[in-house]
Length: 350
Ligand code: KG4
Ligand code: ZN
Image (cartoon, rainbow, N blue to C red; front, side, top):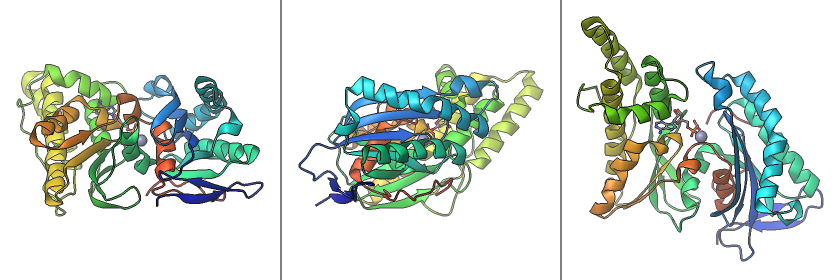
């Protein structure tokens, strides 16, 4: 049975949460780990009743990346508004909620504190259990939204700060099979985008540019790493830097579209090959994508092409790939890596 007992903070009442609960579970969640202030209300881990995201893209665009102090201040300005809008959009009243969840980490400490403290305050005010959520786990759980997906599955988590291949045996049990030993996938995208002079958010803009270039124009290196499911992308970033310098010198300009397409081909085929190897090695036919880079058109194309070969592929809808609170609520409901003490502190790294 996958169900866990939580206590309400004031009256100490027992509340049971999990996929085996017979009651409907309504979770409000808050996400503020980086540059989106988000609040959502999700029923039974899969049905989104409200999903509000206040993006800070415009603010950080002028700096070419996220400035932590500015992000924290913007979260403070938006947090009450996104909570109010989530209640309004869903028509749910605070007393109808089963629990309040929030991202605890990893992320920017000043930003995380804003969301976590708001969630704790709501939990105490309305006497609802508090559930702390791991942001990375939530990116994988985004695949449960609007689907009937059940483990086992191999998850490829590709975000701005992380790259992992995870074997998800059940809702609760998972094992990290491999990860990046240096740059994360999103980080590599953002750094290469900056080299090409593309504006923040780099990954998305590079993805938009790549289809107009030739992915075979330049052969870039796929790093050899010891662990068979591990990755290394810092050499790739340096190779792109050297290539752009060479092209600039030889041609007097950089064929940006071709460089973008060649980089995208190199990084997505590495991710694809290793994830597929993990799935085949463990005999698991279900593969799910998660994290901001799961929104990437080429990565989705590569993985979804496996459906003709007997694999089941899941990727969250675009709005649930990049940071959002619906995935936090879903993660709280499915219980893996959750924390329930009001004393819990934010953490920046895993
Ligand atoms: O998961 P996420 O929203 O935040 C973190 O938890 O890190 O991921 C953000 C990352 C950024 O590096 C961003 O450039 C990248 O996801 N990203 C993309 C695309 N959309 C977002 N990378 C490649 N192609 C995209 N379409
Ligand atoms: Zn994220």
